[in-house]
Image 1 (cartoon, rainbow, N blue to C red):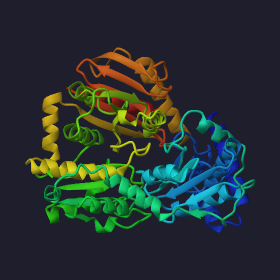
Image 2: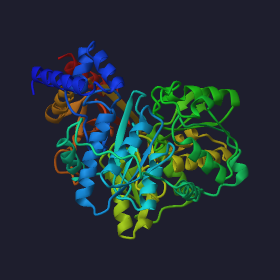
Image 3: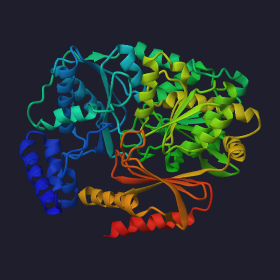
Image 4: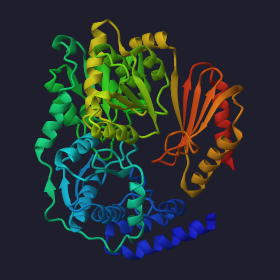
Length: 551
């Protein structure tokens, strides 16, 4: 569709929303204000918020391309229609994190499901997404819904759909649900009933904590409490569960960042509550410095990701998701060496250093597309075949880890447990995590990983991202930054994995470059794994991006 056609579509849909929300003062007033910002108005209405394998995620606000009650209820009605076609007596469990609107959207989701005759279980407080995954199996539900935007900035929220195995829907299921959603209007045909929604029993949470505590490596309590920890839940859902698990393993030498302990929908002290970003640790570093602690542990708002930071040689140092994941793998390999052929499952954008570690330790590496759901799919298949003992570890570069296949999703609570125990063990050996990482690099080779994000807005921005991907796909074949391309993989072709808009370049100095558009945000992600000089490659990348942004 041409730009003028997009603008006309956005204008018409905006006027329709204005007419249909007269009795909803809050959103009607927001729509009137939106008229003062034509670009924002166009972006809010030029398309429908995408529903894919990660459900929906977007900015909070009025419009078809935003997260709001109308979008949530329409999506849930579509989900309900799908469930009632596919299941005899479907049931769904719903959870949410601490984001703006999350509690309301969770209740509305439950009410629409109940209005369609579906058994709906609703958590009565914020909960980690890994607990939702666990609850699906515990309660025997057919699906789960999590209201969250994970680690995104505070203006975002989202709607994740999980299958009965406890990982985000994959395959043709998202398309089938989307088909049902697209048949619906935002303002009519929504069935709604608030009576009869079940509250999730507290025993589900208790069982979840007990299970995670059982993963403890049994470190001596004196060694464990020889480590001084600062923990921040970043105003999210992890606080209660991380505290309960640490208590059960006997860890007492920690303190919580007070201004980030309780839920805060505005994330006042961390507007981007992402444990991948060092700015999210500003408050935690203040506590670390004054308390002379050893390490910061952070979980994101829905507590499926964990990050770690330390003061190393007087410098504030954040471990990347790859670095932390490699350290965890190294630690469990030493404590409980893998049996030959046990599986380490990782995404294609996760450090290739793991393949080198596999040669020493004898585990088998399986690469998946980006998204922990693909790791969960493999865990689910192992479970169905009674072969869970083949699983050893799963990780992705964006701070997602699963140290035990008790669920089919990443988990920041068990990740916190293993990171605390690992840091305590290495401290007892006279080293911090950076010093241990340097020893790993010395043995297996240095591999510096970086992720570069380039943001785009609206319909024009998406078109530019498509053009950039086309350029890398068709025109970057022989070299980049003066380095010869020794291998090029286009994941839209035949790779043994589902087709995906990803391009991988292996370079003559051993470095690797991966380019893909984000599946949840309007940005292009470029990953590099650098084993040599990368400055000229970086300059070329910036040049390509800037060229298309300027067009």
